[in-house]
Image 1: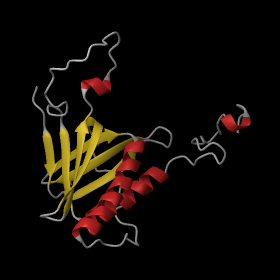
Image 2 (image 1 turned 30 degrees about the vertical axis):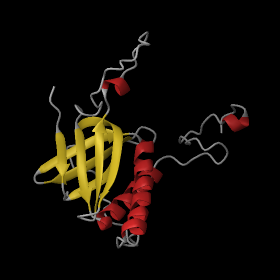
Image 3 (image 1 turned 180 degrees about the vertical axis):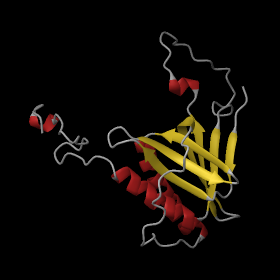
Image 4 (image 1 turned 90 degrees about the vertical axis):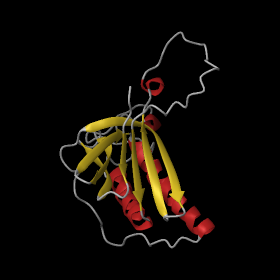
Length: 191
């Protein structure tokens, strides 16, 4: 089976966004450029970690290579909804980050979840030691190359998207539904 590499170097737009109501949201990374639109689904925690790790990558690039970093944008940048149609190309299993010193750009690669990640096989305890093929080699991927400025804008939007969901319970940290929730810190009483 052939795999596709959706490369945007650089994209016209690269954002994290959601579809659905808080508590039922589906998170997406969406890249647009050259008349193409690619949307890939991922988990909320992946978006949050991506923003955090991109911030660390930029700091490390500045420290090690002397890259000039822009300040965090003071004004709200791209706050538009995801471009339509939002058709999921694949669900992200692995995210990869790199900094290209030659072009002073950040490379983000989202790799589709493999069959091993997507389904659990029961009763198969054998490990194939002869399998030298890299597991991600035949998987679809989205590759985006961003400037440090575009990376900062992506980080800020991703953080806004993650924080726009349901507020956390002040006692246990779990998300509060509009009707409340069963708080484990109150021994299961409705809060």
